[in-house]
Image (cartoon, rainbow, N blue to C red; front, side, top):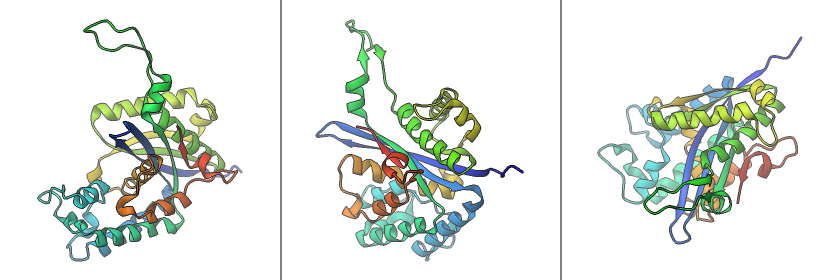
Length: 275
């Protein structure tokens, strides 16, 4: 009797850091793989964290974890009228406490991280080739790279590798941006699935990859709330920036839970860095 395939979901988010001095953009698309049967475990972990951080709120489970709100609070840019529950993150001590508690969620053993990062300017310098420009006309290209296509390919290769190794099938959940942006990402997903990649055949991708869904942030999805914190930390490391509040506790924890593959090489199978 054939072994029943496990069902997984990869929850994805994206982040881009920009160094205005060096004019470098580091783009990261990354997320967490969760067995569908273990989603409730992650959701319980997230809700327990919210009850700890917002113990004085009447409905802490309904608050959406969002790293941007924490960053805005640390910089004095938070819209308190919209997000009053994040005002407490103005305190550096409170932020450090939160990140320390958040890092513990990964220790439940139900989370596996994959992703891809590129230096956008370096990629464009090496591979974008423009046609001779006519005065007054927009720039045209003989070849123009796409950061979404490249990083999504890196991510899907390793997600598919994970699914093959674990005899599973998996879908993707992406945070909904806009109808146009969702469609753009969706088309890139099916383009890669149709063609395969450098290391994963189209047959393997069709056998193991299911579809892609877009979920709004206010749907309070636990997987997306975990994924919200992953790409920003790795993008900052790739850009050689300090971590938030100069504390790399969360990054070190996330690096430990990167996918290791069958060769135990996280740099290849987990978060893959491109120049």
